[in-house]
Length: 631
Image 1: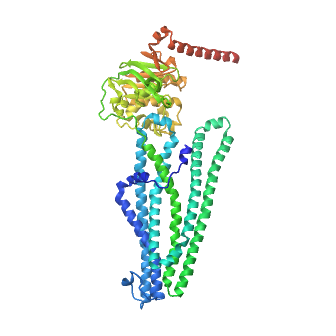
Image 2 (image 1 turned 180 degrees about the vertical axis):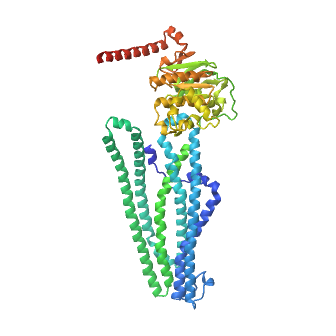
Image 3 (image 1 turned 90 degrees about the vertical axis):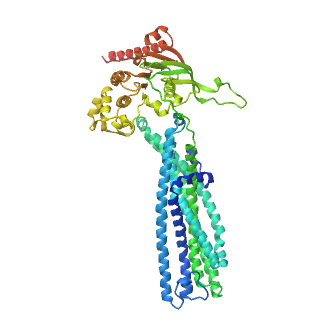
């Protein structure tokens, strides 16, 4: 993650910029208003020194010759008081209009920037929800959160500050250059003589700051990753007295960030005084050469005064442009990462013409082959279809009839949980077919398919909100009465009644204030409240205590009534009453039958049962020995 955050890229990429400007298209007339305001503000900014020149030459010194386009609207030289008053009013008016135009462009561009970023964030989050589960297996959550937050903020800075300021600085520079060349091109070239030095200093500054900013971004990524990991694991740190060691390691990471910022501060501390010195040198040149020309009547005093002011203003936009370069560079890097995410293909989609499945919940696996990944291929080697994948399931076929209670067992990695993921179409199979009520799940809409299932996972997940919201999950037709009825059926109602607000009690992030058993029972209530045709339980009782397991088993009896149910379990004691047990081993369906039938076969299931029975006997023996020692 840190390596990816380190890449800064170019300061301008036309391909990326074209895509970014597409987010401004819905707000094109507001953007046009801001652009016009920028141009007019730049005009007001360059008008001030020109008005000073008119006041000096026309009324104070009264130099001979024309005084530009304003002559026809100003009093003559014989009315100096009135003329000075007119010029002063124009100056104040220019400042006032400059304020109005700056307010307009700032407000409008901030508004447009927020609208565009709202649209972009919405698009990113919507795209993340459509991506299949395998994508999240390979991409850390912290990186994806950064795309929605920090990277979008970088683009907002570009839209509301970077691009606007760059346009304004360019218009001001062009305006100053045009006016200075039109007034006295020789004096203008003398004033511009320091520009090569300015550009050289700017290039050095840019290179230095680029390296510093790269280190800063890398250090920030490390700080975020380290903090997230160690705050999440704070219990383990305290349990093993690792606080001091963790603090020392964080101090090292934090120090890298501080040192990188020191380099950036040093670059700024050198660059800006250098530009100020060169700017002062340009002003000195204007005074020296301009003063000599005034004494030789080769130019006017007003022009020299205006040149001094323009020279002072000329280098501010150059300083500003060097700073905005970093904003652009960061925005281009962020946009590249964002568009890379948005361009990630959505692999699991609903068909154009989905077929609705109607029925009581019959499940059929027909010669299903599945692999999470292809095996790496050597150059010049073309493996056969059977060897191209790292198969997790191999030619699996079975049928679950409506209303059947079916359990799937096997060693870790045998493919039991994979069957559930395929059934819900989190992944697509490579060969074979999976049907629900006679319809291939690839022909069904994703919403229609998943609406038929109620799933309770091994690790129950609760969102921030209330208990009722976690059970309802946005399904509006589930009433509070339905929630309370479901809670009663799964034996969690007594606990909910002890809460101050009942089902409307607030739940903190990930249900941190609830026990594992309480969260699991709420997950059962969630599944029951949605009244699914097919119930899936994936190790739903593996992480609860014995007392809660008794409640869960009682809840299970309510849940499976009249429904097709599929139970993944490692505790064989929880599935002995199943109508049918499927035994998976190394990706293949090896055995199938009831508990007694499988024990009679003395195969894989019998061995699993013997192993667990011996473990239980050993545990009971140790318990008895402890009790005897205590006596």
